[in-house]
Amino acid sequence: MTVPFLDARASYLELRPELDAAWHRVMHGGWYILGEEVEAFEREFAAYCGARECAGTGNGLDALTLILRGYGIGPGDDVIVPANTFIATWLAVTNVGANLIPVDCDPATLELNPGALSDAVTPCTCAVIATHLYGHPADIDTIAAICRNRKLKLIEDAAQAHGALYKGRRAGSLGDAAAFSFYPAKNLGAFGDGGAVVSNDARLVDRVRLLRNYGSRVKHDHEAVGLNSRLDPLQAALLRTKLPRLEDWNARRRSIASRYLSELDGLADLRLPAVADRTEPAWHLFVVRTARRDSLRQFLADAGIETMIHYPVPPHLSGAYAGSIRGEFPAAARTAATVLSLPIGPHLEDDAVSSVIAAIRRFFGSNA
Picture: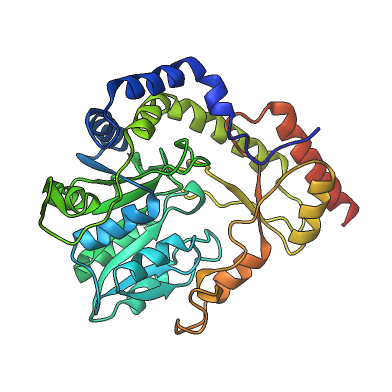
């Protein structure tokens, strides 16, 4: 059996009549920039997240960048970021000219280590970006308490966390503002790029709406130096069609994760994801760790099972930042050398999941 890491076509095939109808609605409507489809999606996605406001953007990186700009964060400011994250988290800070202050990851959760957060705060620190890595919520209560005490903005990088729950609250409603990505492989994915800023801060979201549209509210009246980063009406219409299915798709991801956690438990040299109490991950990715990562990946590839590595190079060792970041982040470096993402898409069949589990058990059985 060939097991793809993710079948990007599956959601279209499932919802083809509804998605085709949404596409035709936009095309026949003749309005292709912002407008009613975008506004409707913004209302619906904000409500889904349990927040008051949403502004669609061109992609997730722009969403993070616009949050920082909306709060006036820029040159001379320090922003704390996780050392173990996709590079977009860092790029947003660089894009606004602020200084990166990385914090190493917790060796258990692989997320920003809240125990090291207080020591990283400088007199110039004005915000913390907490990534809900792989769809697992960060330790928000601890991070938020530090942010309140130090008067710092708490920004959620929720690009992988559509529908994740932390103590009964959804990602997107846990900090001062959140950035989402609708890249096609996300739990709620568009058919192209897209993103959103979600917040209870109406003033911030109003500023984001201004900045995403060339700094203009009225055509040819430019109040600020803005970007061109607007969620397309076509993508908004398609996302509106998919949003009602997100909970079912996330439930399927949880079911697959539950099988992996129970049926791969106890294998020597295979470390499974940790799930914190009172959290319900979105399971965007199911990431295991092993010192035999490369051998396991090749073994699975030979068995027709696709895997990926999220992420093979931590940002501080990438060409973009090598030599420019102070400090060492050994936990992030160790993580990059051992992580492997298993297939977990919501359209993955039970027999495919069984094949993945059986192959991994064969590998560790033959390499005991």
